[in-house]
Image (cartoon, rainbow, N blue to C red; front, side):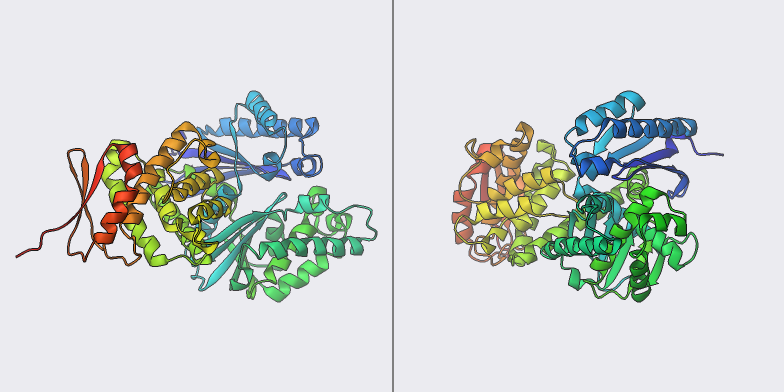
Length: 515
């Protein structure tokens, strides 16, 4: 008996060089089976990365492609879908008009996603593709070169430690090199220097040299994998480093016209091949990897996993752990006191749990508090004076895997108020938030201030804590604690925001000794 329509879903990716869609079904065992894959070449990136605006011709082409995709969705009976647009649309000044035109002509609601969300979806797909494969020991660099940007994630096992999105897309790179530089060889050398210059800045954000393995995905590198061999239809192929470098060197000698003749590529695909492969090989040379692991995973696979109802709670738990792992990596970068940070996080969670039902906190709010607790003191790396403000800046300006810029801004504000002044309307970062976000920041910062006070001396004296209500008081009982004089003094000065926000006093008690 076929699956009901609700089990059918679609993922649409509007990229810089093409629009793609996968239609899939959820099997009875919870697995996902792709039924149809469609691709339509639409060079949105040529407009976005040269003029900063999507042309009328490109908008019409995109609408026509998506109208065809919508008819396919209707034929299958797809009810669940997610359509995303990446760098080309994200960087266009008329992106809102583009989305409106698509909605009016197709009925499809398209969402513009940022680099961190691209990284999250990509990693989800890659981990699924590598399931069952031998575990990769050490660290791995995950790379996807698209038309507008390259998404990079450094993994320790399956946990992301550093990630970022960089201007290394194939179409963007082509647009940045004048077509009149001379011969093809000279054009390639100019392009190589441009890529090298960008990678030198990438190394400031991602420790490329620490990678023992190199995992690549994207249409251009998949083409290389098919040419160089490996099992047909395999989820991933392993290509020796020397063979990959040699192939890229040979491809770089060919013009787009020659690539079309030799490999039967479409001309748009031939145009992007050389810049993309040059990015992969230059990044590869920054690592210790001796092979290139090429996977068939895509951002659309990540979207389909999100849409599938099975294992939703497990995916959420996994993402939370990945985000916390990335936050800890950022903390180590700025030499934070890890034991203090973990103790503050644990104490903050206990207080959060006591207030969760009453305040209608959700799991996202818990995550924001966890990350803010871990990173509240990283500003000490800059200097002890006003370090809470330095913490705000470092968090808000850092890429943290799985967190969107708006989420980082909320977390940065929470961390900023772990000490000193309370949130005020004269504080520009705070007042720039939406009203509900300001309320949330005040609540989470109030909890963080209390938790931080309970480890005032960074000695982790409070290892166990019981939280209870007594009328309008929150009573914190510490069993078997040493002298808590300093913690009581700190709590007296830092529970001000808690009383103001929640209308409750915080009382610290020692549990009576058993006789």
